Length: 190
Image (cartoon, rainbow, N blue to C red; front, side):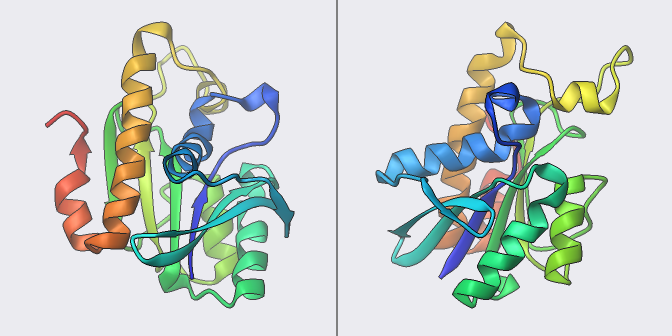
């Protein structure tokens, strides 16, 4: 089984914020496959399906961003999932809106959700897809930026980038990470 986790914060207060790019991408994957992400287990909402011939567990941790690793570790233990079968989708404020970056492993890059996962899972060797949410403007703090909603002018591109991110996750499952990286890394409108 593969565990595909989209990171975000639960609750209406955080809905559609930049920090919830992972949640929003997971919702698109679920919608594309007719999966309901509503089972409450191990500090998360989950839904199961078979995608590209692989059994997958779609996950939205309900622990809030900074403790995402707790839910993911608990699910990995329960379902006996190895870190090599983990894919994490997160926001990235170093990337412009409409830019994706897939990596087979790596550092947290300052992202608290990824820091938590690396700490709880005990390795940084898991696949991740970072979705660009735009750089922090000079007049804003990092926290204010990631917890803000997108400006109206960016919403069409944001929606499109989440759909392409969902396609990229499927490519990771079907074609492997190397092919998915060469196909999807960079701006979504190449």
